[in-house]
Image 1 (cartoon, rainbow, N blue to C red):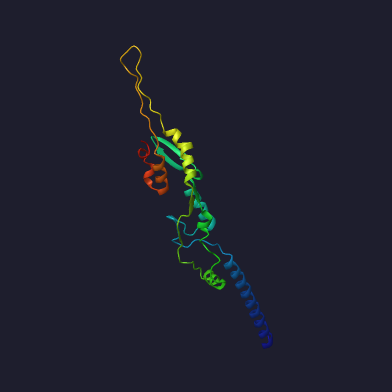
Image 2: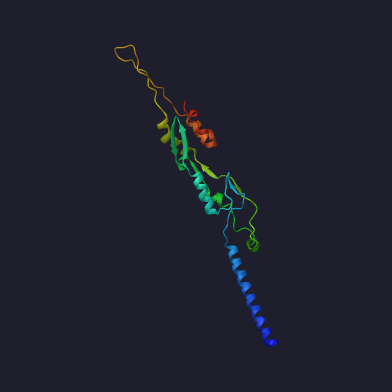
Length: 197
């Protein structure tokens, strides 16, 4: 090969490598802008660790934890109340939307993607919810009171004898105390003796 043909050959190889690197850079840049967005390590919503979860995964996790029925144990009765009937409305979308994948400059996200760096600032989010005490009161009236409250039965004299039938004591539910305990989120609200007088 002559010197001029060798120069042309290496120039063509150089141009191909250069074009290949530009194409590879553009593909990598595109991937960095559409990369999977996850909560940084150490992130929490309330006390739940949501590290390395996407927004959708974090929302599903929150629903699985906070969407469970409320369990009450009163006078030996186990009562499950759907969380929607307790007056609580958890704002799952607002909590997970604290993860902002579009923040920062595009080049910074590209650089972090190339070097496989994650955002090191964990996100701490309080539990966000709306509470309607009226709904909780109605639910207690409809589902709990009828099961717990008992009308007292007075002893009755058995005719022709001096003996009496056995009476039974009644019970009432301290609805306000139950509501306050549920609102406060105390773990002691499962103790059934507190609500029955």
